[in-house]
View: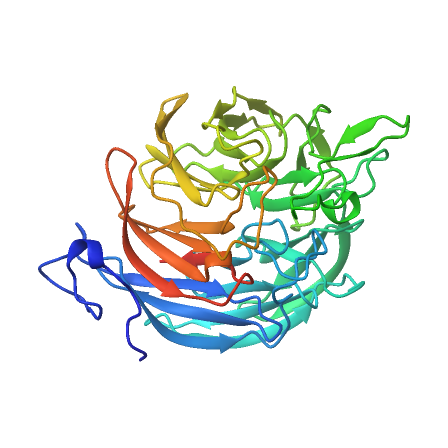
Length: 437
């Protein structure tokens, strides 16, 4: 096993550290964390999590397919973090028997078995069915329906944004012919972000980021993307979804065989409803993080698949809008919410109290600086933090900072603040997706 690369200078801990009885979480146990490198020769990195939150790399297992590397298909940039403007590219089955990951470079999905000690064995690799056009494909987000053995794969570019795969009892994948779109008749180049299943497996919810890819809209001379394009009437049109048209969340009913119904386009509550985070103890309630509306809101879905959206609770945008508050993690007790500000290089936290959300710590941790080459939508130089993941006991939050080549671990505090306890080197700009137990 390679040496632990975690750093804990602030706490006076030794660099290399195992399962210490003196320093342990309330349950005294560690676990496992998985991240895909998204390199051209893609691999999943398996880390052991100690009881104190530090990370030790155990293995890198090839996916048998291609990532996009440092290339960012969503914007056409040769090197930038958050390649696909997506989330949920690495997931575990609820029984932890299987791990699934996208391979965005060639539009494939890989399945792995997960042993009792967390080690991975590649089981299968299959194409999603969407052809690769140009330098890279865009398969990016996964959701799994265990009762129907169905895997849902979301792509950045359409028109066939969503493809399906059947999963056998031994983890083998069978691509299916069904295909679904997040486009409307008037918006034929939409960019959905991620897909999630409702806890009762009745609905598949998809959030949308842009109505036009930023690769089409272009970039400013400083490298920050353009959010306005000429509209049909010649006037500038905002490319962020759900702004102002109330159609940023797409709802599909899940049929008895796991296929999907026709889509219902509903109000996402704010500009670019990027991330959908389900609460653990309220199956009809979820939180939306907004890439452009700069905050979060609480939403509910009824038995007919209609959603109601609360007001957007914003973070401080003194550094410029849009902050790109994108990836979310909810504490196991549904009391704290962690939101990654992609444009600001940090994380903000919120308190959840019944039907109310309020800011707890903004920001909750110091900025993690990148190499100065990347700018977010707000124009601010950023390290491009993307996917995050919270441990099952809520004690630790892990955050990818792609432009800084770091995966950082934080100890969570009752007031919402985050104390760094781990930092490991990861590939530059390309990594995405976190899952674990």
